[in-house]
Image 1 (cartoon, rainbow, N blue to C red):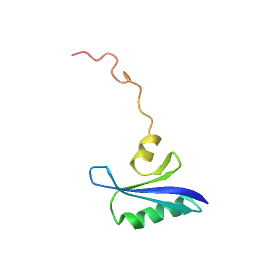
Image 2: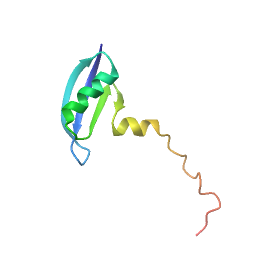
Image 3: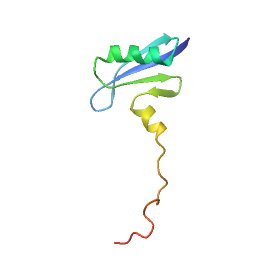
Image 4: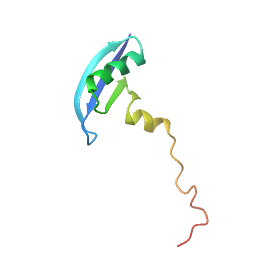
Length: 75
């Protein structure tokens, strides 16, 4: 069993509601979040890790180092 925090978000990305729940798996926490959110954006946190939502997606996409793709570019 794991402790999860479900954050329902406003359209501007700010937090509208936070609830704490205990689930056996990440998948069951995500299903619960989806049901609670009722179509609104939401995030699922397990401790300090965002496992579902915009921050989780951003954490999985590595940012390109500054300057990559700009070599030889002149105005």
